[in-house]
Amino acid sequence: MPSPNRATDTREILIVDDDPGQRSLLTTFLTGQGFHPTTVTSGEEALDELKKGSYKMMISDVRMPGMTGLETLRHARAFLPDLPILLVTAYADVKDAVGAMRDGALNYLEKPIDLDELLESVAQVLKRATVSVSEEKRLDLPPHLIAASSSAQQIYRDALLVAPSESRVVIVGESGVGKATIARLIHDSSPRNGNSTKTLNCSTPLSESIDSLLFGSEHATGLFMEMSESTLVLEDIGELPLSSQAKLLQVIQTGIFRPEESNSDHHTTARIIATSKTDLTTKVQAGDFRDDLYFRLNVMELVIPPLRERREDIVPLATSFIKEFAQGHARFAATVLPCIENYPWPGNIRELRNAMERATLMAHGGLILPKHLPAKIQAAGTDDESGEASQTRKMADVERETILQALRNNRNNRSVTARELGISRRALTYKLQRYREDGYLSES
Image (cartoon, rainbow, N blue to C red; front, side, top):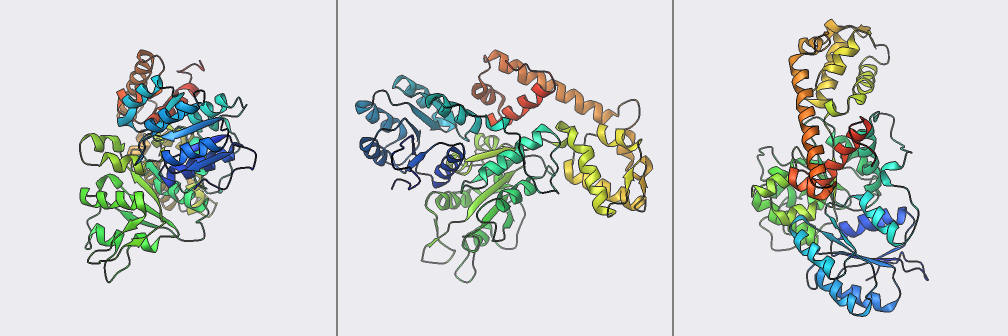
């Protein structure tokens, strides 16, 4: 049924998607931007709704049971030849989507959706002046969260944008970058924040099977039942066994699961947040992760850059840690700052926190000197940059030149460039934002 959030005489945007997580993200985001979306769950419902009134545009998923988005497009064109239609498509559907452009599609967005790109497309059609998501400056964060760099600010901003919806989120980043912190922020900023969350590490060998823990058994309650009104965090989702992936896909699609050794089905409304150390597309291409599960799971993707790529955060984070460990009494000697700023922090925030805890103990809660730091971090503060830090910077230079050259070769087409580089479009967007701020990329 159409959503009830439509004003009586306002029919702006019709959203067509069978996935409640995707519908929730689009509705929450567009409503927050001042638009008036209406949602339906199938192509058949969309055609009926279009005949009832005058919509200004339609946003439709491509992959849907029954009538697909492409078929919906063609039927809608028969009686609304001028209706702007924006298609939302998975990677495997791109060729079909490009073909659909010949059938009258305005444009297509790849999953996971880039909210800036969505906003630009909608605002252009509806001729509405609006502010880009990445340009919204106000960012209210809990005091314990540090976001000095623009990269961290963008990640937190995206997390707060998606939090009020029921959308599934995939958080990607190296070990120790703070994936659990982002997951907690999303939950705490959502309507489910009155309930506690639970985390299941999909890569850890367990005495019980993953299926038993997730779906339960005849004699034990599983996490999907226990977290039905809350948020379930699936850590290292790429390590989930293929057999369990099939069952997880069914839960995402229908909300229905069957406990082990049980003959009865159960329903869950648990919100899923998944984390991964690597881009899941590499797992998909290797056959270790189901592509249909990837597209269903990855409604919104948040890519957290490693600490070495957001150095503005290092000193503020380190300062917050020593204040925590020394109850506000510890401070850094000036000679410490080059050490912690130059060190590449391969263990990211987790390594930084551990190093600051050690330094605080060694300094007895007083002035922290270089000698209180681990030897490899002390070495990074010498005039001649340490070999490890130098190598890290050289690799970053090579990566930057590779990305910018690929972007030039593809005439600034980010979607094509991301596919060519084997990274997600959102990861590419974050990197380009950093290059622009560092002066390597012009605003044009």
